Image (cartoon, rainbow, N blue to C red; front, side, top):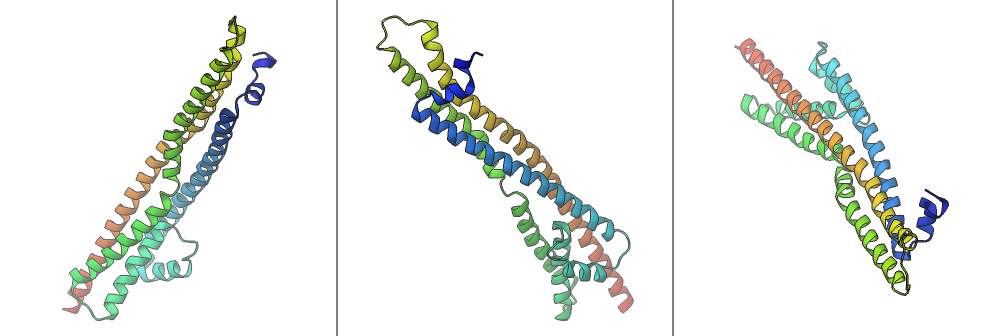
Length: 230
């Protein structure tokens, strides 16, 4: 590509509307990459926190000790630990009210964990909608810039008596730059969205599995306490 058809020269000589479209797409692309890196680091942190707590949970430590540690580390704990803490807290509150019915105790713990699960998933899924919007809208924004640029180029050619490839190429190239930048913004957003959606589904399945396992442990403890009380 010669100097006249370089990307910078094409943008500088493009019409004002095309330049505005390109500027908007560049801002969207930068914001998209920032969201991608934030989400990547956040998901890696969530996975590490869940791994750490799950190892502690299955290491044989008592539930009361785990609950005390989760209460003290509430600000730095992960989703799985916070879900455990919410279920254990509700379970203990019901026990303090001298409720002994196993069904009532388990239903209260399940509701508390389910509410905490929904809050955690809302946090984990944040910014996904932005990436989806970038992936779906950016190509159309670029297409608008391209169509406008081509119209502007043809209007400029209307006053010429002789049209050659040398006179048509710069205007068409200026218009196509908007589509190229739009694809540069959209493709990473779509790839990242699919990757993060898959990772978030795995996190959700893991948390739901933990809730079921923790519920089973509470049921076994209630059964053992009922047997010993007899």
